[in-house]
Amino acid sequence: MLERTSRPLRGLSNGIAGAMDAIYGALGAPGKFLQDFLNGSWLGHSLHAVLVDVVVGGSTAALLLDILRVFFGIDGLETATTWVLGLAALSALGAIVTGLTDYKDTAPDSEERDVASLHGLINIVATIGFAISFFQRLADAHDAAFWVLLVSYLVVSVGAYIGGHVVFKYGYMVNHNAFNKGKRAKDFTPVIAVTEVPEETPTKVMFGSTAVMLVRRADVVYALKETCSHAAGPLSEGELKGDTITCPWHFSTFRLVDGGVVHGPAGSRQPSYRTRVSEGMIELQGPHD
Ligand code: FES
Image (cartoon, rainbow, N blue to C red; front, side, top):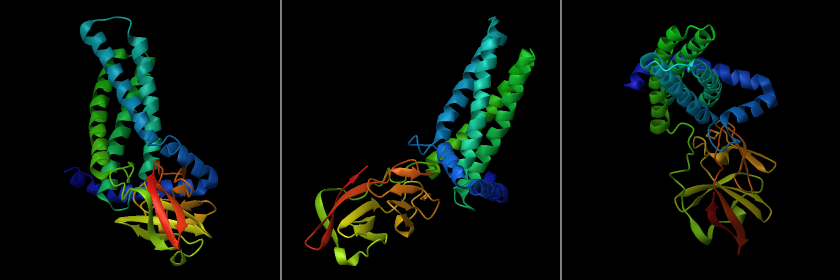
């Protein structure tokens, strides 16, 4: 149902995602660092989710204080309510910016992007409501502000529900390797002859049923799980730059040596393997994540 409801937003969705891409592209290297910060690559998971907790928690607390004041006649709560709501509104602004940054890397013309758009638009409306209610309080119009907050809270609840749908149905901004860690080997296990892996060329090999990307430099071999932790892009088709590999889909960059995230949107490190060359074969042990 959410998919059907959000389908008409597709043109708008693609336009917004394209505009976000263009803005970050125009900002160049600083834009990349800003994007990393807003994606939460430094945090290990989405920064958007952290801010959303503050929005929902803050607006719930503000509404509860308002209910105590309006329906139970408890005095002296106005100042606390105003500033708790102010914090929630500010966090909601941050949630919009971080959300748009995550959102630009959803697949074009996908249901995931459609539903994420609906989630975002509803929460933008709620944020405007929170801001209005906050400024009404600054103007001492606390009773009118209560009703605006109540409506905005109902709106943000719908938006939050749809946000949950995006994450739990589509795996939006979750580690794509979390539920498919692949083959695990305690001992070094041969996978391919060293002569079959050209030097300085990301090469996909199979380790049991798990695809692994190898990069060989003479007898030193680096091995990372092939599927990118962000959205399962193929790392062996990525760009090798120094000691890193960049995913071809949304340009997350990982250290070859341990799969650590250098640039997002990925927030989770890429599973990596220990390697050695023995009797002409490349052997893997792991993964380690
Ligand atoms: S799949 Fe998105 S950066 Fe790799």
